[in-house]
Image: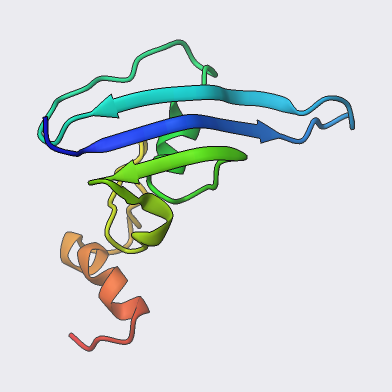
Length: 111
C-alpha cells in the first residue's frame, strides 16, 4: 500500500471552562489510510470527528502526536491540504464564481 495519511499518538485537549481538568477530545489516535483508500469516520455527536478533521486539515493543532501525509509531516505541507466542512462557508450574497474566486482575491490576484 502506498503512503497516504497516518496519525501517530494524536491527542487534542481543550482547557476546561471551569478551570478544572482539560477536556480530552482525542486521545492516542492511531490510523493509517493508504493512498486512494476510501474511509468513513463515524460516531455520535461530540465524539471528536470534527476536531480530528480540523487537525488533519491544518485548521487546528494537536496537543501532541504526529500526522504524516504521503510520508511527510503534515505541518510542513501548508497550502497543500483541502477540506470541506460539514456546513459550507459560502457567502450567500456572492455568486458561485465570486465565492470560488475569493481565495484569489484575498491573495491580491486580479480577475
